[in-house]
Image (cartoon, rainbow, N blue to C red; front, top):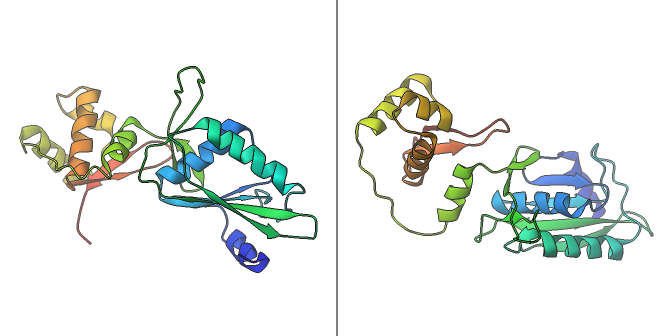
Length: 216
């Protein structure tokens, strides 16, 4: 990629598939961005670009890439595929473009507790990387499974569909409130109906919600 192409890319601003960083941040922070891209259709992390879009570059690309490899090697579970490309800004400074493809191994998590390898998963919502809900994790776990979905369309499902026809959307907590289900049961049913193509999951920074799926 050329510097002119980078300028055009930066001019679009940060979004679901694009993030700017002046330098490689702390290990957990950079892992969060990369994991979110891998879990959300892929994306590009531009290192050497300010939040306001100023293309400043980094002075020591080798050092920045070493920090990146170390951070992602230790803080992503399972490991995430990514590649880098250097784009010269001046004779002494480069922008490092980190390209992360959509992953068939999702969900990916960041490692917070080194002892047991535990930590949250992240997804991309607009220009932010936010912690994934349990429902998003469950849907990612079955995205590439190819397993069929079976369920009985009973009174609870009919209640949900009538509610959605009237109000348009529902959250897990809202569904639990209007039904006789506890939150775990409500979550499981919404995930099942989403997997079956009856509902669509929509992600917002304040939380997920569900709507009836209509073929376009």
